[in-house]
Amino acid sequence: MRTAALVGLAVVLLVGFAWGWARSARADGAVPARVGQFAPDFTLKDQNGRPVTLSEFRGNRTVVLYFYPKDDTPGCTKEACSFRDDMARFEALNVRVLGVSVDGIESHRAFAEKYRLNFPLLSDEDHRVSLAYGVFSRLVGFAYAKRTTFVIGPDGAIRQIFTDVDPKQHAVDLLKYLSGSPVQTSSEG
Image (cartoon, rainbow, N blue to C red):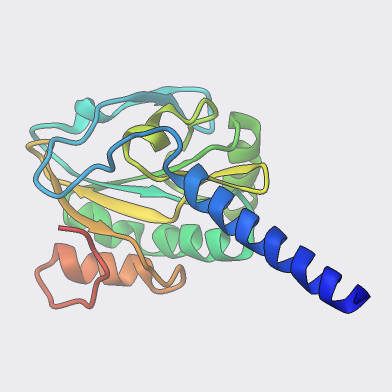
């Protein structure tokens, strides 16, 4: 009897957790950004407190806007370091890399200094930009941006969205895509 009650309670908790998690991912009602749409414009502060506005790049540069869950965690560190290590190749293609998470400026500063990151990490503490792009989520009270990358053309339109990426390989895959080489993607559009 006691075992059946515990199993029943476990099932109720798991179903409730799954339902709450699914609802929280879209609780804001935001519609995710899509390929072909103009990228939502924003201004966020980087790890040095300087404002960065997406539309500043319009007309002359492609932007890789990558959202990541949390500074200085294993997957996010691998991803950031792979962008750092391949930055010269991105610059040769006239591409600006911008990282975004819901962490604060001080967290970004420490992360960038620790790993000598050579590109802006933008702080979306109020979740406004993550919501606008449809990547904001919560898990058991933990707010984060889902690991998602938007390639935004010089015209400001979203060209590609990468949703299921290998953090260690992501920069290389993006470089292949940007240079016109075939790459396996799990993208929307």
